[in-house]
Amino acid sequence: MTDGMGFAAVRGMIRMLLAVFYRRIEVIGAERIPDRGGLIVAANHHNSLVDAMILLAVVPRRLRTLAKAQLFDHPLIGPFLRLLGALPVHRRQEAGDDPLKNESLFAETTRTLRQGGGIIIFPEGRTQPEPVLLELRTGTARMLLAARPAEVTLLPAGLVFEKPGIFREGRALVLFGEPVPVQECCAFALSEPQAAARKLTELLTRSLRELIVEAQDLETLGLLELAEGIWGSPGGAPRAPVQRVRWLQRAADAYQRLLQRAPERLEQYVRRLQSFAADLEAAGLTVAALAQQRSAGRAVRFALRQAFALLVGAPLAACGFLIHGVPYALVVVALAWIPHTAEEEATDKMAAGLVLYPLFWCLEGWLLWHYGGAVALAVFIALLVPAGFVALSWRARIARVGREVRGLARALREPGVLARLRGERDQLLQELKELALLSDALSRGNSEMTR
Image (cartoon, rainbow, N blue to C red; front, side):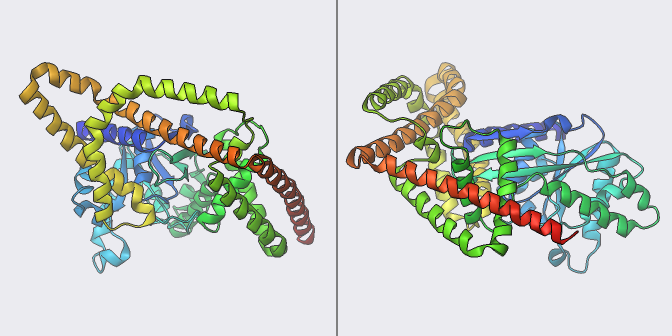
């Protein structure tokens, strides 16, 4: 198999796995990706190997990703990294006293960029689950400057996740920003290469911060997302992904400002927001669901539509469960057996899936061909993908119906629960607007003090 065929095969498998695992992956700013020429895609790093998988899937060019050297020895991940043409990175504690280990990396990235190729790099140097951007290392800038006189585009990519480790509930947003201006730093590097690398790293940091949502921890980010839902209610249309990110960025800034200048009032609001979140979960509802009008007739119509869709899709869904059920169960078992951190959960699921699913498809295909002949094998191949997606849709629909039933049952048991939750939502919205005004006033006060 040639390098190009190996890359195409692995990227096809990655795209399929991402489509199966994530409910939605949205890409904004893809028109900023250059068709040709040296390219460095630099992104934030919160979700282990999944970050690189998403970028490989959405960028329409062949890219070489940088990965920790130990991953090349991983029995599941290593072979795929080699097929992708990935480059091993030896961190200081791993390289020890052998500088040649990373000199070869820089030589290869320089060669790739000068030949008009592209690389993926995570300038923070390590993955971590908290929604903050760590201090960037200068390696990205030094790679770009080493490729002179070739023109290289430095493209920042912000990765924003929602429930990244949860099967079929996770969502990802990829925001490609404007290319970082590098000409001045390239000229500066002729006389002061280290200072130029630091300056270019500062520019990249600024660009990445404009594309992501930073909060002090995941719990705070979850509360900001709940507040965003409240701010758009009642009955407001969902924001576009970029607008949602911008709102969350402003909210995160306001949160930090209030934490410093009005901590007691902020803490009181956070406690109320946490209590509201718990009440919503107990009722099986979301903020968006509170805006919907519920009635017995509406509930019956919903149940009939869902029952009809489930009935029609049941035969194909059953085929999907039959074809994919065993490897799916084995992935769950493998995940329980493989030690992993929170940010590595989705990565390990997909790594196990990359191996187990094709193995079992080949085994099932061979059994069908052996016992049923060419016709049985042809039917199996034809059903492989559509049956899998119908099974996923069927499973998701069952889960949605379950949530709706739980919410309706509680509404019937406690007729006032919807009115009470809507009242809490409205009170929280009013106080959120007051906090926004307070934050704006504090911001203006700071600006006046610094004049």
